[in-house]
Image 1 (cartoon, rainbow, N blue to C red):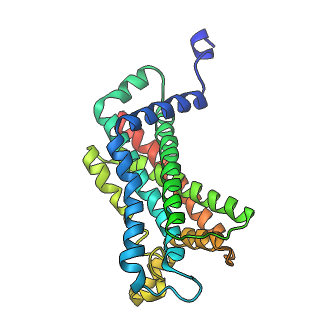
Image 2: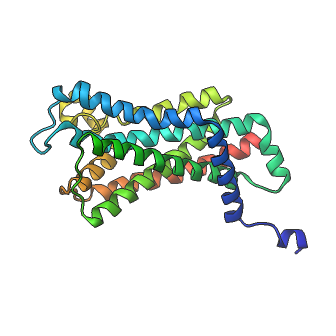
Image 3: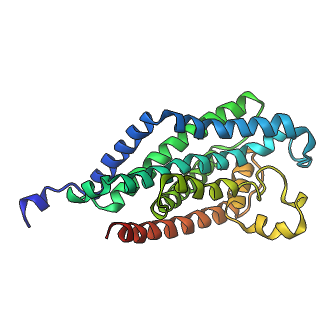
Length: 261
């Protein structure tokens, strides 16, 4: 083994360096970061104050804000991960990937850096949304174990959605197209139990709303935050997140090789 190979940094070191790079890029792109943070807050305020009085969520909830906050937290993850797709697409278009490959930095550390930076941005955005929710009347009643479970489910979905965004960034030929692809992830919370009970939707939509990956995550977070029975719903949510993550990581590896060969 040559001295160069022996002294080459490992995967974790490379991924950490790429994470720092992605965070510095985010710091320079302040408008996109602010937009991804403020949109979920604005949507929460719109639903609570404009539509909340007209939506019946049942007697289990004192007010609409108690029902809607978990859905907004998942919506926040979708908005926040959209910038990952754009950033990856810009890297592919700008030629920086060729420079990284000449430095013996593979695709996985680069993508892992984008994903890790996305997780950090999403955690900041989620904290902001939760803080505003507390100001407008949200009162969680979670146990310490419930808080840990909520954190685990949120982190799992943020990571999975960020990897999907990375794959979409590789699939798209332009940053604009990458941003368009991520619209579908931002749309998924709407045909779920995020904003209204599934039973209030048209019958033909129940099957999709009940069995899509966002619904069990929202039901888990809502039940855990309000200290309500959740059954095996958190495990179903985590299984969905694990499946999405596995597919997204595998697809990212294949797409990166296709784009850089």
